[in-house]
Length: 515
Image (cartoon, rainbow, N blue to C red; front, top):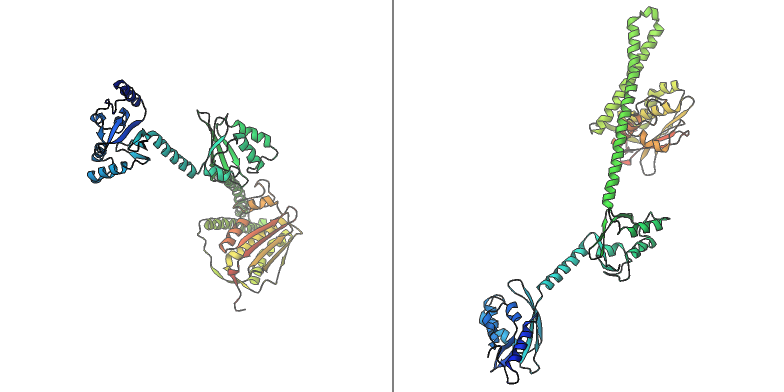
């Protein structure tokens, strides 16, 4: 019997044509399966069924054994690898149970078919619909993938619908904004978000400017260019971008930019340090020009005078005085050049220490003998703490003396006539010891201490300062101290003098020595 033949005498051919045309107009495939003569047959189907499942045209001539359709599918691999007869028999047996069923099947061409079957009221067959859900399935898959990607994204993402309802958030947004309690919050709008940030203290720097900040936040969707930076109370920074979609949805993208801000700060600091170093270099060159030229002029001037003038005419007292000036100028030049060379060696790691256990009292006494005349000329009194700790210091004798002499020279320079300088060694409770040089001199502002510790740094401009020097004494002393794992610290204030302490770790303190 063909698809246009009547199974009973109750319908006319025209009625059947009308039914068939109605079925063919469906968007879904449809088939009706019943038992005829003890065997399952498909007795009715529409054109969508044949096309969707890609059956041969002749399969539309009905009724046709159900097993023909199953075998055809098995032969073209619809059910995967396996014995064709066995696959056919298993599926026909399962269909004969007339149970409701619903499942999806992926065809070899990638089409995904949703198959839904329901038993006939007579209990001897079933009606089955076939729907192409390929696009829907792919959309659901892509949607799931998109949601998973959003959840794992480091950027915070929130979407508001055209009615300004929060409809989607990812994990990053919810973690950083605890007032958001789910993926969506109907009735919670963009402006509500801004108010919540202020009220919960999530952001800083808006105290007293809440209205202005909220206005800027609310205006961002209308003028999103450049976005908006937010500093959180945790100290972290976020950058907010707003995108308006054609659908009217508002998308907020929040990126954590703390590392970028730290890098910017580091870059600014590096720029400032480079500018400071460049100024220090310029000041140093001007300063060195002055410091070198002054003693050289003295050496050249007095030596030319001695060469061009008869000693008897000058008198031996004058000759001796001129020679003394030449000697002092030469020594000043030697100290200056030595300090520059020492600084350079330390900077490149070429200065080596010749270490031994040093007697602190002997070191002090020798340095005082060397500086005594200079202090006397300046009218400065030096007090020596003659009871240093009964330990020895494992260090380079020449460099420790250099530290002490530099500190004493600097103190004399800025203390002047009638001032007092103290020198001593002291013990700390943790076993370390420290050298202390204090004076009653002019002192310096706390903000200038860092400058004084930089190589060639001068608190006063080289053209206006009142005291000679290239500004190498303190920086060199600090570098030499650091070579001994020691720390040099300065306490000073204008008009109240200066205290310099050099603390040596207990690892350099020798207690078991022969007196």
